[in-house]
Amino acid sequence: MSTVGDHMNTSVTTVRPDQVLEEGAQVMVERRVGAAVVLTQGVVVGIVTERDVMKAVARGMVPWNTKVEDIMTRDPLCAFPGMSTHEAVTLMLDHGFRHLPVVDGGKLVGIVSARHLLRAAEDATQPGATAKAPQ
Image 1: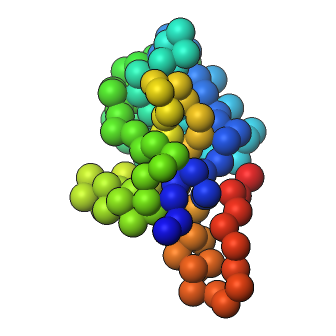
Image 2 (image 1 turned 120 degrees about the vertical axis):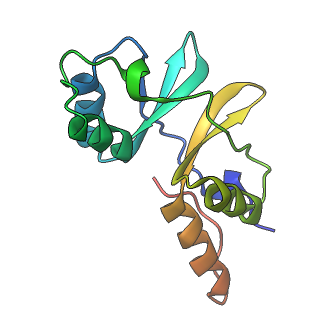
Image 3 (image 1 turned 135 degrees about the horizontal axis):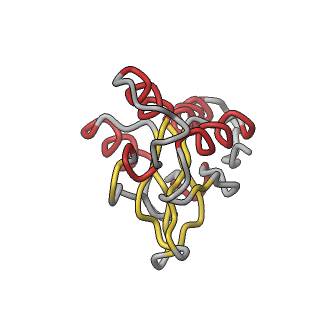
């Protein structure tokens, strides 16, 4: 059975809740990712996504005055490395998420996206394919 740990990205883009949206969005653009996990003293307190940034702009929020904590999803649902990819997909579909932070023992160890899980499903249909984490 394929697990989240087999497909998650261990290079996670993170931001602080007190950073302004402009900084958070810039980090996401530079890293070419659709989400950043929000950490306070190493603890996952939120997630900010490209959708959150677009909503903020559409609402007229000023990126250089708006804090990440003002637009982030607080206390996000998280996956864990041993969770099956099927469980992660179900969680994403049920809640309308495209990204899940991955935690192990309360510590952030990765992030998994809908793209990672689609790739896992595709790999599972290929003869002789092995699981590998996208980077």
